[in-house]
Image 1 (cartoon, one colour):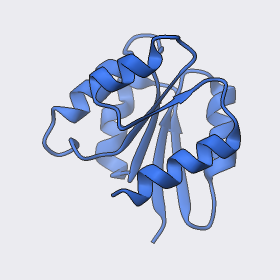
Image 2 (cartoon, rainbow, N blue to C red; image 1 turned 135 degrees about the vertical axis):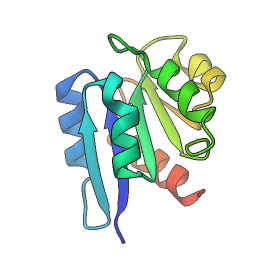
Image 3 (cartoon, rainbow, N blue to C red; image 1 turned 90 degrees about the horizontal axis):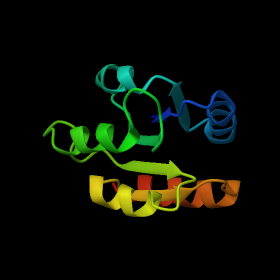
Image 4 (cartoon, rainbow, N blue to C red; image 1 turned 180 degrees about the vertical axis):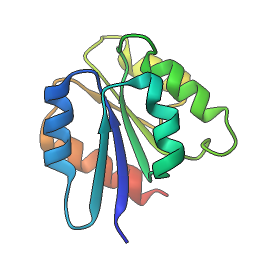
Length: 121
């Protein structure tokens, strides 16, 4: 069975790159640029992993992650937070993200982190 990864970033180019890089025979990628619709999308798709950007308009990634991690149904959903912010790693840890990916990132670092987080389930 394919693993499902939901990606949320307001930068469409990053969504495209991540989708192309991660989509495979064993991984289905679902992407959205709208953080306000993310929790509903997660309820529908039941992903194995969420990759989310920290800095987004309307609803920031740390607020989404904090809400998911305090909801019993999604508290165990693995989450990788991405950010170009110098404080991104600290914010990711504080809100409950399982891992952090600094932007810009190398695709090999992305693959390694996704494999590590998914295999830890």
